[in-house]
Image (tube, rainbow, N blue to C red):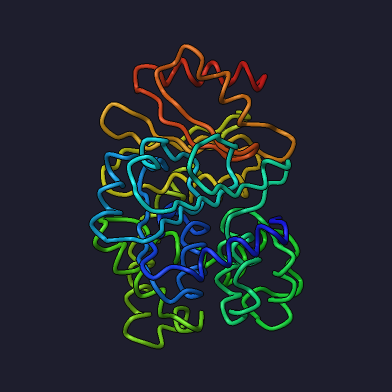
Length: 345
């Protein structure tokens, strides 16, 4: 968790800005982090990072200047290049929970410095929750979307049927409740063209009741639901096809070709829930296989991935049970052999 001093500092940073630019990871917890911040300050613009979560000077310094931002908040992004920080002329505040990195001239908040790993929306809720109790549903969606069952979910259970009181695990919440459906609504509305994503994000900044989405009560909510249904149709077909490839092998590998839609994170999460084994879902694009890796409790996929990448043309990293990687196609077979060896599978 953030310390009381960190909460106070971040609340001051959010309060004292007129044109903040929020750069966030394009997943449910990154999106929730942005929504919580935006609805607190009621100012600014959100910019999701699609593909590899890295803030580079080449791509994003220009965005800061074009918008005329007076402050930059980076939310739930694993990598920020020093060149970006040096290039922008305004304060940069970076809130994250991935591996700790050392950077100059940035206000960096990461509980991993103290050995604590909690999703970014949990930290943001510490900052804004008192002033914005009506946004608790967003904080719960973001936390559950990052496979984390927060303490404040219990409070939410007392007030909403979206997360039944009988639900006590993040897996149950993700795949057997309406909160899990909303996690997919968040995730699937981050798919596709940047123009469509920005449109969906803008709509979400104005949704006050999650039932507006689930029951399609307004024209704006119906836009979100339509996008969810379109992507979910492809997702369900892909999930069914992936499950046909299951076997007695303790390493489950499924790859698909798609230049437009990345569903590897979503598929790997549900396959882990259904199969309870080490999961690799890869999206073949150009000359790479872009993978999401998942592992059951007590299997550290991050360490195994780090060693399996030795001698491989590719990169990757993440958390103990959830990682991302991109491997050149010509090295993918060798990568799988290396990973099997590291995991003793």
